[in-house]
Amino acid sequence: MLAVTDETFAADVLEQDKPVLVDFWAQWCPPCHMIVPVLEEIEVERADSLVIRKVNTDENPGVMRTYQVMSLPTLMLFRNGEPVQAIVGARPKGRLLEELDAALRLVS
Image (cartoon, rainbow, N blue to C red; front, top):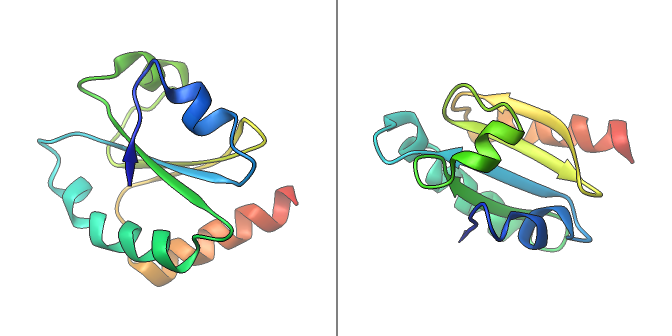
């Protein structure tokens, strides 16, 4: 997963043609580390239809404030440069995919 910063967020997330799932995380957050393998699997399985990026919130507080991320991990789905769904907390892969698919159907 490509890490993005406050400076690269617009190009790496908002200007993408595909939907983008952004993982807002921090080094000190155990659930943030727990979901990494799930996100890596989804990134491979959905490479043709979904982009996954990660933002270290300790190092990039600007984008965290902009999107009002209050808890970690927060997964935020963007489509056409706009946030369409926020998922707060770690999820098993199946449940996460269900939530993502439902959100994408609503905005397609």
